[in-house]
Image (cartoon, rainbow, N blue to C red; front, side, top):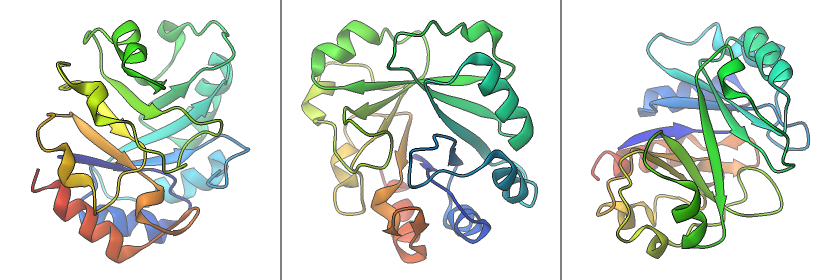
Amino acid sequence: MRVKICGITSFYDAINSINAGAYALGFVFYKDSPRYISPKKAYNIIKKLPPFIKIVGLFVNDSIEDINRISKISNIDIAQIITTNNTSIYYNSLDIPYIKVLRVKNKDDIIKNYNNDEYILIDSYVSTFGGAGRRVDLSFFHDIDCSKIILAGGLNENNIEELKDYNFYAIDVSSGVEISKGIKDKNKLISFINKANEI
């Protein structure tokens, strides 16, 4: 199972995540998040990382212009985009690939907004953005093709085995591998990714 470690704020946490087997790293560019990192600081981490790791930037209600500008400064590979204010997002104007985030309250949210035409990240709906630790009810995914879904929300080493029958494309974790908000735990990273690799 592919694992993305989100909320990276230091080179130490980035390299520990990679050494544990992470497929991708996430940097939060939402200023109200406790895991916020400036584009320049993210770049200073990213430029020192080994090759073949996907680097993702999380954006919340940003304009296309800001997403393109921050992506260029930080040198990320993919924009992970949350929109909540009905602002029109012209995805074909983005300079880099993107992943839409769908924050769900119930199964109908998935049925209405996911058609298996593109990869999507699904998280539990909360008033804040990212790393809240609230799980998505797995019953929402019964009878749904999950092969293009990246699942986030409330995952940790104690519940990850529950995902084995759903065939998610990847999983995204932040708070489940932390000592405190924005600070990763090396042992939790290793344990979580080892268990993900068994799914």
